[in-house]
Image 1 (cartoon, helix red, strand yellow):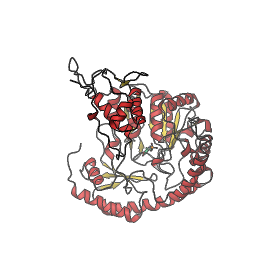
Image 2 (cartoon, protein in one colour):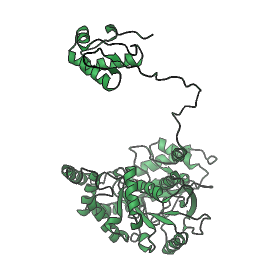
Image 3 (cartoon, protein in one colour):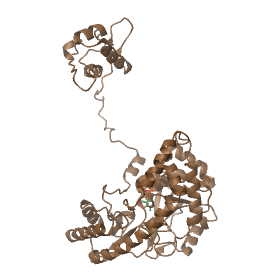
Image 4 (cartoon, protein in one colour):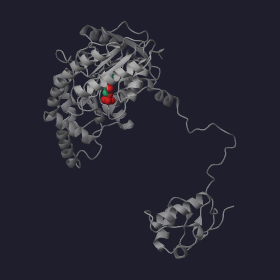
Length: 487
Ligand SMILES: Cc1ncc(COP(=O)(O)O)c(C=O)c1O
Protein backbone atom coordinates (compact mmCIF):
# COMPACT_ATOMS: atom_id res chain seq x y z
CA UNK A 1 0.00 0.00 0.00
CA UNK A 2 1.56 3.35 -1.03
CA UNK A 3 2.47 5.65 1.80
CA UNK A 4 2.28 9.40 2.03
CA UNK A 5 5.48 11.36 1.86
CA UNK A 6 8.08 10.96 4.60
CA UNK A 7 11.23 13.05 4.50
CA UNK A 8 13.28 10.09 5.81
CA UNK A 9 12.82 8.45 2.40
CA UNK A 10 15.17 11.05 0.89
CA UNK A 11 18.93 10.85 1.49
CA UNK A 12 21.04 13.52 -0.18
CA UNK A 13 24.82 13.54 -0.38
CA UNK A 14 26.26 17.08 -0.70
CA UNK A 15 29.71 15.74 -1.68
CA UNK A 16 28.42 13.52 -4.52
CA UNK A 17 29.36 14.68 -8.05
CA UNK A 18 25.65 15.03 -8.93
CA UNK A 19 23.83 18.29 -8.06
CA UNK A 20 21.46 18.24 -5.06
CA UNK A 21 18.45 19.07 -7.20
CA UNK A 22 19.26 16.17 -9.59
CA UNK A 23 19.61 13.80 -6.59
CA UNK A 24 16.29 14.97 -5.15
CA UNK A 25 14.58 14.71 -8.55
CA UNK A 26 15.88 11.14 -9.10
CA UNK A 27 14.84 9.92 -5.65
CA UNK A 28 11.35 11.44 -5.84
CA UNK A 29 10.89 10.04 -9.33
CA UNK A 30 11.85 6.55 -8.14
CA UNK A 31 9.42 6.80 -5.20
CA UNK A 32 6.61 7.82 -7.55
CA UNK A 33 7.42 5.10 -10.12
CA UNK A 34 7.63 2.43 -7.42
CA UNK A 35 4.32 3.67 -6.04
CA UNK A 36 6.05 4.28 -2.72
CA UNK A 37 4.22 7.61 -2.95
CA UNK A 38 0.47 7.38 -3.29
CA UNK A 39 -1.06 8.50 -6.61
CA UNK A 40 -2.84 11.77 -5.99
CA UNK A 41 -0.96 12.17 -2.69
CA UNK A 42 0.52 15.48 -1.62
CA UNK A 43 4.18 16.45 -1.39
CA UNK A 44 5.40 19.14 1.05
CA UNK A 45 5.71 22.71 -0.19
CA UNK A 46 9.11 23.69 -1.59
CA UNK A 47 9.76 25.89 1.47
CA UNK A 48 9.00 23.10 3.94
CA UNK A 49 10.95 20.39 2.11
CA UNK A 50 13.98 22.68 1.73
CA UNK A 51 13.89 23.32 5.47
CA UNK A 52 13.48 19.61 6.36
CA UNK A 53 16.33 18.56 4.05
CA UNK A 54 18.45 21.54 4.97
CA UNK A 55 19.07 22.53 1.36
CA UNK A 56 18.37 25.68 -0.67
CA UNK A 57 14.77 26.18 -1.75
CA UNK A 58 15.90 26.62 -5.37
CA UNK A 59 17.08 22.98 -5.43
CA UNK A 60 13.60 21.78 -4.43
CA UNK A 61 11.95 24.14 -6.94
CA UNK A 62 14.23 22.80 -9.71
CA UNK A 63 13.47 19.16 -8.78
CA UNK A 64 9.68 19.75 -8.59
CA UNK A 65 9.69 21.70 -11.89
CA UNK A 66 11.48 18.88 -13.68
CA UNK A 67 9.08 16.26 -12.25
CA UNK A 68 6.13 18.44 -13.33
CA UNK A 69 7.62 18.82 -16.83
CA UNK A 70 7.91 15.04 -17.19
CA UNK A 71 4.37 14.50 -15.92
CA UNK A 72 5.08 13.01 -12.47
CA UNK A 73 3.82 15.98 -10.40
CA UNK A 74 0.98 18.44 -10.75
CA UNK A 75 1.94 21.97 -9.64
CA UNK A 76 -0.50 24.83 -9.29
CA UNK A 77 0.28 28.26 -7.85
CA UNK A 78 -0.42 28.39 -4.12
CA UNK A 79 -1.64 24.76 -4.06
CA UNK A 80 0.05 21.64 -2.66
CA UNK A 81 2.09 19.67 -5.23
CA UNK A 82 0.24 16.45 -6.07
CA UNK A 83 1.60 13.12 -7.34
CA UNK A 84 0.02 12.30 -10.73
CA UNK A 85 -2.03 9.10 -10.95
CA UNK A 86 0.01 7.13 -13.50
CA UNK A 87 -1.23 3.98 -15.23
CA UNK A 88 0.43 0.82 -13.91
CA UNK A 89 3.44 0.04 -16.03
CA UNK A 90 3.93 -3.68 -16.37
CA UNK A 91 0.43 -4.99 -16.10
CA UNK A 92 0.15 -8.64 -17.16
CA UNK A 93 -1.79 -8.85 -20.42
CA UNK A 94 -5.31 -10.26 -20.11
CA UNK A 95 -4.31 -13.04 -22.51
CA UNK A 96 -0.67 -14.08 -22.74
CA UNK A 97 0.78 -12.96 -26.08
CA UNK A 98 4.19 -13.69 -27.62
CA UNK A 99 6.74 -11.01 -26.79
CA UNK A 100 7.14 -8.38 -29.49
CA UNK A 101 10.56 -7.35 -28.26
CA UNK A 102 12.27 -9.51 -30.90
CA UNK A 103 9.57 -9.11 -33.53
CA UNK A 104 10.89 -7.78 -36.84
CA UNK A 105 9.22 -7.50 -40.22
CA UNK A 106 9.53 -10.07 -43.01
CA UNK A 107 11.68 -7.51 -44.84
CA UNK A 108 13.79 -7.11 -41.70
CA UNK A 109 14.30 -10.88 -41.55
CA UNK A 110 15.62 -10.93 -45.12
CA UNK A 111 17.94 -8.05 -44.23
CA UNK A 112 19.13 -9.83 -41.10
CA UNK A 113 19.89 -13.02 -43.05
CA UNK A 114 22.39 -11.27 -45.39
CA UNK A 115 26.13 -11.85 -45.19
CA UNK A 116 28.72 -9.26 -44.42
CA UNK A 117 32.38 -9.32 -43.53
CA UNK A 118 34.20 -6.50 -41.77
CA UNK A 119 37.14 -8.32 -40.23
CA UNK A 120 38.75 -7.59 -36.88
CA UNK A 121 40.00 -4.04 -36.37
CA UNK A 122 43.70 -3.26 -36.43
CA UNK A 123 44.97 -6.20 -38.46
CA UNK A 124 45.71 -5.16 -42.02
CA UNK A 125 48.00 -7.89 -43.37
CA UNK A 126 46.15 -10.08 -45.91
CA UNK A 127 42.89 -8.12 -45.45
CA UNK A 128 41.14 -8.30 -48.86
CA UNK A 129 40.83 -4.97 -50.63
CA UNK A 130 42.61 -3.03 -47.87
CA UNK A 131 44.92 -0.24 -49.05
CA UNK A 132 48.13 0.61 -47.18
CA UNK A 133 47.52 2.82 -44.11
CA UNK A 134 51.23 3.71 -43.72
CA UNK A 135 51.52 5.31 -47.14
CA UNK A 136 48.42 7.47 -47.08
CA UNK A 137 49.39 11.20 -47.04
CA UNK A 138 47.68 11.97 -43.73
CA UNK A 139 49.52 15.29 -43.30
CA UNK A 140 48.15 16.65 -46.55
CA UNK A 141 44.73 15.18 -45.84
CA UNK A 142 44.50 16.70 -42.37
CA UNK A 143 45.65 20.11 -43.69
CA UNK A 144 42.93 20.11 -46.35
CA UNK A 145 40.33 18.90 -43.90
CA UNK A 146 41.26 21.56 -41.33
CA UNK A 147 41.20 24.29 -43.97
CA UNK A 148 37.70 23.30 -45.06
CA UNK A 149 36.54 22.91 -41.44
CA UNK A 150 37.48 26.54 -40.80
CA UNK A 151 35.38 27.60 -43.78
CA UNK A 152 32.48 25.30 -42.92
CA UNK A 153 30.24 28.17 -41.79
CA UNK A 154 29.48 28.98 -45.42
CA UNK A 155 28.31 26.38 -47.92
CA UNK A 156 29.30 23.36 -45.79
CA UNK A 157 27.08 24.24 -42.82
CA UNK A 158 23.58 23.50 -44.10
CA UNK A 159 22.75 20.18 -45.77
CA UNK A 160 21.80 21.83 -49.07
CA UNK A 161 23.83 19.71 -51.43
CA UNK A 162 22.09 16.35 -51.06
CA UNK A 163 23.53 15.20 -54.39
CA UNK A 164 27.08 16.05 -53.36
CA UNK A 165 29.50 18.98 -52.98
CA UNK A 166 29.48 20.65 -56.44
CA UNK A 167 33.31 20.97 -56.81
CA UNK A 168 33.69 17.27 -55.97
CA UNK A 169 31.06 16.27 -58.52
CA UNK A 170 32.96 18.29 -61.11
CA UNK A 171 36.34 16.83 -60.14
CA UNK A 172 34.95 13.28 -60.36
CA UNK A 173 33.32 13.95 -63.74
CA UNK A 174 36.65 15.20 -65.11
CA UNK A 175 38.54 12.22 -63.66
CA UNK A 176 36.05 9.69 -65.02
CA UNK A 177 35.99 11.18 -68.52
CA UNK A 178 39.76 11.26 -68.81
CA UNK A 179 40.79 8.13 -66.88
CA UNK A 180 37.82 5.79 -67.11
CA UNK A 181 36.22 6.60 -70.45
CA UNK A 182 32.89 7.37 -68.75
CA UNK A 183 30.44 9.54 -70.66
CA UNK A 184 29.08 12.03 -68.15
CA UNK A 185 28.55 15.55 -66.90
CA UNK A 186 28.90 16.68 -63.27
CA UNK A 187 25.07 16.74 -62.97
CA UNK A 188 25.02 12.97 -63.42
CA UNK A 189 27.39 12.36 -60.50
CA UNK A 190 25.77 11.61 -57.13
CA UNK A 191 27.99 11.30 -54.08
CA UNK A 192 27.17 8.41 -51.76
CA UNK A 193 28.41 6.88 -48.51
CA UNK A 194 30.62 4.41 -50.34
CA UNK A 195 29.59 2.03 -53.11
CA UNK A 196 27.36 0.07 -50.74
CA UNK A 197 25.06 3.02 -50.26
CA UNK A 198 24.79 3.38 -54.06
CA UNK A 199 23.75 -0.29 -54.34
CA UNK A 200 21.12 0.20 -51.65
CA UNK A 201 19.70 3.38 -53.22
CA UNK A 202 19.60 1.81 -56.68
CA UNK A 203 17.92 -1.34 -55.33
CA UNK A 204 15.24 0.79 -53.65
CA UNK A 205 14.66 2.84 -56.77
CA UNK A 206 14.91 0.26 -59.55
CA UNK A 207 13.66 -3.02 -58.07
CA UNK A 208 10.25 -4.33 -57.06
CA UNK A 209 9.92 -7.33 -54.73
CA UNK A 210 10.17 -10.51 -56.82
CA UNK A 211 12.20 -8.88 -59.62
CA UNK A 212 15.11 -10.87 -60.96
CA UNK A 213 18.68 -9.62 -60.70
CA UNK A 214 21.42 -11.36 -62.64
CA UNK A 215 24.17 -11.37 -60.10
CA UNK A 216 27.73 -12.47 -60.71
CA UNK A 217 28.52 -15.81 -59.10
CA UNK A 218 30.92 -15.72 -57.38
CA UNK A 219 30.01 -12.13 -56.73
CA UNK A 220 30.27 -9.32 -54.24
CA UNK A 221 28.15 -10.26 -51.22
CA UNK A 222 27.61 -6.57 -50.35
CA UNK A 223 25.80 -5.94 -53.63
CA UNK A 224 23.78 -9.18 -53.54
CA UNK A 225 22.75 -8.37 -49.97
CA UNK A 226 21.41 -4.97 -51.04
CA UNK A 227 19.37 -6.51 -53.88
CA UNK A 228 18.08 -9.41 -51.79
CA UNK A 229 17.12 -7.02 -48.99
CA UNK A 230 15.02 -5.09 -51.54
CA UNK A 231 13.10 -8.32 -52.22
CA UNK A 232 14.83 -9.28 -55.49
CA UNK A 233 15.44 -12.84 -56.65
CA UNK A 234 19.08 -13.43 -57.55
CA UNK A 235 19.88 -15.46 -60.63
CA UNK A 236 23.53 -16.51 -60.98
CA UNK A 237 25.57 -15.04 -63.83
CA UNK A 238 28.50 -17.44 -63.66
CA UNK A 239 32.04 -16.12 -63.80
CA UNK A 240 35.09 -18.35 -64.12
CA UNK A 241 38.75 -18.01 -64.95
CA UNK A 242 37.91 -17.34 -68.62
CA UNK A 243 35.33 -14.70 -67.88
CA UNK A 244 31.56 -14.30 -67.81
CA UNK A 245 29.31 -17.11 -69.08
CA UNK A 246 26.71 -15.16 -70.96
CA UNK A 247 24.40 -17.98 -71.97
CA UNK A 248 21.64 -16.16 -70.17
CA UNK A 249 20.15 -17.37 -66.89
CA UNK A 250 16.50 -18.40 -67.49
CA UNK A 251 14.60 -15.61 -65.73
CA UNK A 252 14.16 -12.19 -67.37
CA UNK A 253 16.27 -9.67 -65.47
CA UNK A 254 15.24 -6.22 -64.27
CA UNK A 255 18.84 -5.49 -63.36
CA UNK A 256 22.26 -6.98 -64.09
CA UNK A 257 25.19 -6.47 -61.72
CA UNK A 258 28.75 -6.73 -63.04
CA UNK A 259 32.32 -5.80 -62.10
CA UNK A 260 33.79 -5.81 -65.64
CA UNK A 261 37.06 -3.94 -65.01
CA UNK A 262 38.18 -6.25 -62.24
CA UNK A 263 35.82 -9.01 -61.26
CA UNK A 264 35.18 -9.31 -57.56
CA UNK A 265 36.64 -11.54 -56.20
CA UNK A 266 38.39 -13.38 -59.06
CA UNK A 267 40.12 -10.32 -60.55
CA UNK A 268 39.45 -11.21 -64.23
CA UNK A 269 38.57 -8.51 -66.78
CA UNK A 270 35.59 -8.68 -69.12
CA UNK A 271 36.75 -8.74 -72.77
CA UNK A 272 35.07 -6.38 -75.25
CA UNK A 273 33.15 -9.19 -76.96
CA UNK A 274 31.50 -10.14 -73.65
CA UNK A 275 30.80 -6.47 -72.85
CA UNK A 276 28.97 -6.00 -76.15
CA UNK A 277 27.07 -9.27 -75.67
CA UNK A 278 26.06 -8.20 -72.18
CA UNK A 279 24.79 -4.85 -73.47
CA UNK A 280 22.82 -6.63 -76.18
CA UNK A 281 21.23 -8.94 -73.60
CA UNK A 282 20.35 -6.00 -71.38
CA UNK A 283 18.76 -4.21 -74.35
CA UNK A 284 16.74 -7.32 -75.24
CA UNK A 285 15.40 -7.59 -71.71
CA UNK A 286 15.21 -3.83 -71.19
CA UNK A 287 17.22 -4.32 -68.02
CA UNK A 288 19.36 -1.90 -66.03
CA UNK A 289 23.06 -2.61 -65.63
CA UNK A 290 25.03 -1.68 -62.53
CA UNK A 291 28.70 -1.46 -63.40
CA UNK A 292 30.67 -1.61 -60.16
CA UNK A 293 34.03 -0.21 -61.26
CA UNK A 294 35.74 -2.15 -58.54
CA UNK A 295 39.55 -1.86 -58.34
CA UNK A 296 39.81 -0.67 -61.96
CA UNK A 297 42.64 1.73 -61.07
CA UNK A 298 45.00 -1.03 -60.03
CA UNK A 299 45.96 -2.77 -63.20
CA UNK A 300 49.40 -4.29 -63.31
CA UNK A 301 49.64 -4.98 -67.03
CA UNK A 302 48.69 -2.45 -69.68
CA UNK A 303 46.39 0.49 -69.03
CA UNK A 304 43.11 0.45 -67.08
CA UNK A 305 40.28 -0.80 -69.30
CA UNK A 306 37.71 1.90 -70.18
CA UNK A 307 34.28 1.61 -68.60
CA UNK A 308 31.38 -0.40 -69.99
CA UNK A 309 29.25 2.71 -69.43
CA UNK A 310 31.29 4.47 -72.13
CA UNK A 311 30.22 2.00 -74.83
CA UNK A 312 26.57 1.79 -73.73
CA UNK A 313 24.58 3.83 -76.21
CA UNK A 314 21.24 2.83 -74.72
CA UNK A 315 21.72 4.73 -71.43
CA UNK A 316 20.94 1.82 -69.14
CA UNK A 317 24.24 1.55 -67.25
CA UNK A 318 24.69 3.07 -63.82
CA UNK A 319 28.41 3.36 -63.09
CA UNK A 320 29.37 3.01 -59.40
CA UNK A 321 32.74 3.84 -57.87
CA UNK A 322 34.31 4.14 -54.44
CA UNK A 323 37.25 5.91 -52.80
CA UNK A 324 37.65 2.99 -50.39
CA UNK A 325 40.59 1.47 -52.25
CA UNK A 326 42.51 4.50 -53.54
CA UNK A 327 42.10 6.47 -50.30
CA UNK A 328 40.72 4.44 -47.40
CA UNK A 329 37.55 2.46 -46.60
CA UNK A 330 36.47 4.38 -43.49
CA UNK A 331 36.25 7.59 -45.52
CA UNK A 332 32.92 6.19 -46.72
CA UNK A 333 32.79 8.16 -49.93
CA UNK A 334 31.66 6.74 -53.23
CA UNK A 335 29.62 7.91 -56.18
CA UNK A 336 27.36 6.84 -58.98
CA UNK A 337 26.94 8.15 -62.50
CA UNK A 338 23.28 7.87 -63.37
CA UNK A 339 21.32 8.30 -66.60
CA UNK A 340 19.42 11.62 -66.49
CA UNK A 341 16.09 9.74 -66.56
CA UNK A 342 16.50 8.56 -62.97
CA UNK A 343 18.26 11.62 -61.46
CA UNK A 344 15.14 12.90 -59.75
CA UNK A 345 14.46 9.52 -58.20
CA UNK A 346 18.02 9.36 -56.85
CA UNK A 347 17.64 12.81 -55.24
CA UNK A 348 14.47 11.58 -53.51
CA UNK A 349 16.12 8.31 -52.45
CA UNK A 350 19.14 10.17 -51.01
CA UNK A 351 16.88 12.58 -49.14
CA UNK A 352 14.36 10.13 -47.73
CA UNK A 353 16.94 7.58 -46.61
CA UNK A 354 19.32 10.22 -45.22
CA UNK A 355 22.23 8.63 -47.07
CA UNK A 356 23.72 11.86 -48.41
CA UNK A 357 27.40 12.01 -47.50
CA UNK A 358 29.05 14.53 -45.12
CA UNK A 359 29.96 17.70 -47.03
CA UNK A 360 33.11 18.54 -45.09
CA UNK A 361 34.91 15.34 -46.15
CA UNK A 362 33.67 15.87 -49.70
CA UNK A 363 35.10 19.38 -49.80
CA UNK A 364 38.50 18.16 -48.55
CA UNK A 365 38.43 15.39 -51.17
CA UNK A 366 37.62 17.91 -53.95
CA UNK A 367 40.75 19.86 -52.94
CA UNK A 368 42.74 16.62 -52.75
CA UNK A 369 41.79 15.86 -56.35
CA UNK A 370 42.05 19.40 -57.72
CA UNK A 371 45.46 20.06 -56.18
CA UNK A 372 47.01 16.93 -57.71
CA UNK A 373 47.38 14.84 -54.52
CA UNK A 374 44.94 12.19 -55.72
CA UNK A 375 46.79 11.50 -58.99
CA UNK A 376 50.17 11.51 -57.19
CA UNK A 377 48.98 9.10 -54.49
CA UNK A 378 47.48 6.76 -57.07
CA UNK A 379 50.73 6.71 -59.10
CA UNK A 380 52.77 5.93 -55.97
CA UNK A 381 50.40 3.20 -54.82
CA UNK A 382 50.36 1.54 -58.24
CA UNK A 383 54.14 1.15 -58.08
CA UNK A 384 54.12 0.01 -54.46
CA UNK A 385 51.29 -2.48 -54.91
CA UNK A 386 52.83 -3.95 -58.08
CA UNK A 387 55.95 -4.82 -56.06
CA UNK A 388 53.91 -6.13 -53.12
CA UNK A 389 51.81 -8.27 -55.41
CA UNK A 390 54.88 -9.92 -56.89
CA UNK A 391 56.31 -10.52 -53.43
CA UNK A 392 53.01 -11.87 -52.12
CA UNK A 393 52.69 -14.37 -54.99
CA UNK A 394 56.23 -15.66 -54.45
CA UNK A 395 55.86 -16.14 -50.67
CA UNK A 396 52.39 -17.55 -51.07
CA UNK A 397 53.54 -20.20 -53.51
CA UNK A 398 56.49 -21.08 -51.29
CA UNK A 399 54.49 -21.49 -48.05
CA UNK A 400 50.93 -22.25 -49.15
CA UNK A 401 51.43 -23.99 -52.52
CA UNK A 402 50.45 -27.33 -50.96
CA UNK A 403 46.94 -26.05 -50.20
CA UNK A 404 46.32 -23.10 -52.51
CA UNK A 405 46.51 -22.35 -56.22
CA UNK A 406 46.61 -18.62 -56.86
CA UNK A 407 44.27 -17.24 -59.50
CA UNK A 408 46.38 -15.45 -62.16
CA UNK A 409 45.04 -11.95 -62.87
CA UNK A 410 46.35 -8.56 -63.86
CA UNK A 411 44.32 -6.30 -61.63
CA UNK A 412 42.99 -5.60 -58.16
CA UNK A 413 44.58 -5.39 -54.71
CA UNK A 414 43.53 -8.86 -53.63
CA UNK A 415 44.06 -12.37 -54.95
CA UNK A 416 42.04 -15.56 -54.73
CA UNK A 417 43.75 -18.76 -53.66
CA UNK A 418 41.68 -21.77 -54.80
CA UNK A 419 41.84 -24.73 -52.42
CA UNK A 420 43.71 -27.78 -53.69
CA UNK A 421 42.79 -29.70 -50.55
CA UNK A 422 39.40 -30.66 -49.12
CA UNK A 423 39.45 -27.97 -46.44
CA UNK A 424 36.33 -25.97 -45.67
CA UNK A 425 37.21 -22.35 -46.38
CA UNK A 426 34.99 -20.99 -43.59
CA UNK A 427 36.86 -23.16 -41.07
CA UNK A 428 40.26 -22.06 -42.39
CA UNK A 429 39.19 -18.38 -42.45
CA UNK A 430 37.86 -18.64 -38.89
CA UNK A 431 41.20 -20.14 -37.77
CA UNK A 432 43.04 -17.34 -39.58
CA UNK A 433 40.85 -14.59 -38.07
CA UNK A 434 41.55 -16.06 -34.62
CA UNK A 435 45.26 -15.47 -35.42
CA UNK A 436 44.52 -11.85 -36.41
CA UNK A 437 44.49 -12.49 -40.19
CA UNK A 438 41.43 -10.99 -41.86
CA UNK A 439 41.22 -13.29 -44.88
CA UNK A 440 37.80 -13.99 -46.31
CA UNK A 441 36.34 -17.34 -47.46
CA UNK A 442 35.60 -17.56 -51.19
CA UNK A 443 32.45 -19.67 -50.68
CA UNK A 444 30.51 -16.75 -49.11
CA UNK A 445 30.55 -15.07 -52.54
CA UNK A 446 28.30 -17.84 -53.89
CA UNK A 447 24.56 -17.91 -53.20
CA UNK A 448 23.72 -21.06 -55.14
CA UNK A 449 24.80 -24.71 -55.22
CA UNK A 450 28.41 -25.91 -55.33
CA UNK A 451 30.36 -22.96 -54.03
CA UNK A 452 34.08 -23.11 -54.73
CA UNK A 453 36.31 -23.03 -51.67
CA UNK A 454 39.29 -20.77 -51.36
CA UNK A 455 40.60 -17.67 -49.64
CA UNK A 456 40.41 -14.05 -50.73
CA UNK A 457 43.59 -12.33 -49.55
CA UNK A 458 44.79 -8.76 -49.79
CA UNK A 459 48.44 -7.95 -50.49
CA UNK A 460 48.46 -4.14 -50.48
CA UNK A 461 48.17 -3.14 -46.82
CA UNK A 462 51.38 -4.56 -45.33
CA UNK A 463 55.09 -4.40 -46.11
CA UNK A 464 57.06 -7.44 -47.20
CA UNK A 465 58.23 -8.48 -43.74
CA UNK A 466 54.75 -8.30 -42.21
CA UNK A 467 53.25 -10.14 -45.18
CA UNK A 468 55.80 -12.94 -44.85
CA UNK A 469 54.99 -13.38 -41.14
CA UNK A 470 51.26 -13.36 -41.90
CA UNK A 471 51.64 -16.02 -44.59
CA UNK A 472 53.69 -18.20 -42.25
CA UNK A 473 50.92 -17.90 -39.67
CA UNK A 474 48.41 -18.90 -42.33
CA UNK A 475 50.56 -21.92 -43.15
CA UNK A 476 50.20 -23.01 -39.50
CA UNK A 477 46.46 -22.50 -39.70
CA UNK A 478 46.32 -24.92 -42.68
CA UNK A 479 48.56 -27.40 -40.87
CA UNK A 480 46.31 -27.28 -37.81
CA UNK A 481 42.95 -27.39 -39.60
CA UNK A 482 41.72 -30.83 -40.60
CA UNK A 483 40.16 -31.25 -44.03
CA UNK A 484 36.46 -31.73 -43.36
CA UNK A 485 33.04 -32.05 -44.92
CA UNK A 486 32.21 -28.73 -46.52
CA UNK A 487 29.21 -26.70 -45.43
C1 LIG B 1 33.16 -5.45 -55.34
C2 LIG B 1 33.14 -4.33 -54.36
N1 LIG B 1 32.49 -3.21 -54.69
C3 LIG B 1 32.51 -2.15 -53.88
C4 LIG B 1 33.19 -2.17 -52.68
C5 LIG B 1 33.31 -0.92 -51.86
O1 LIG B 1 32.29 -0.70 -51.10
P1 LIG B 1 32.29 0.57 -50.16
O2 LIG B 1 32.64 1.78 -50.95
O3 LIG B 1 30.88 0.60 -49.68
O4 LIG B 1 33.28 0.31 -49.06
C6 LIG B 1 33.83 -3.32 -52.28
C7 LIG B 1 34.48 -3.38 -50.96
O5 LIG B 1 35.12 -4.29 -50.57
C8 LIG B 1 33.82 -4.42 -53.14
O6 LIG B 1 34.51 -5.53 -52.82
